[in-house]
Length: 308
Image: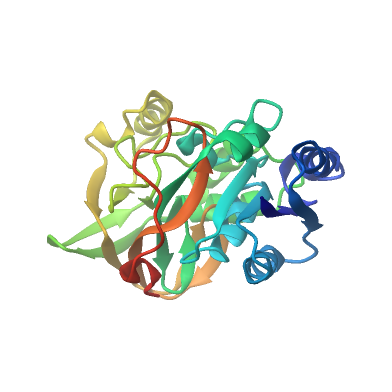
């Protein structure tokens, strides 16, 4: 197996602790793979390294990091025949949890050796790829604040979200989709490829990365007691059954806001225009998942999947 492991030394539990890099090097030696471990040094470097790995003939390219590292490495592999491997070690690990990929120390490396490739759908918002989720409103506000923290994890999300809840202002959003159009006043709005943000916070219980559809979830401004009820539903896998929630599924959306603003892609904040074109690329990324998790056989990308 010719492989490349891309290690983000600033991601999650990797920060100041290179043990996962050493574990990857041990894994390569134990399995006698033709593989190397390389470290990122700057933003978007992981995408450059992933593309270089494909050009070098690597069959497997592995991200060792959190959701941001996952996004960068996967961005370099969409539409190629290379298989994406994930060692999830960030704060949320939404895509990894959705796919059943274990944490390091509980089988993540074993999945690289014994797993099966699964062809999953991926998304684009304007020109920015996402693989787990994108969103605007409150959750983009939380992503901005969270990106500034030195200590992350679920407690950091809770503290940041609590602070943002009382200061964030909702905004009108026009949603165009295959079934027509609707206007909402969105406190937060998520377009989900998988079912959760991470940390088992499941906002779209019916979402799947292999069904050719996104789940759009929009939440209007709600009172503090109603927000508490939604928080319970978030961890009880019943969020989209709340009467407060608007759910629309489809492969393409156009969102229009009154003015440009922030969004997030897989938890990473980015400034965007007032018009957001969101499209799904079916079966465009092959991911190594645990045995038995491959719901449909992996296959080379189709022409539609390769369309940018």
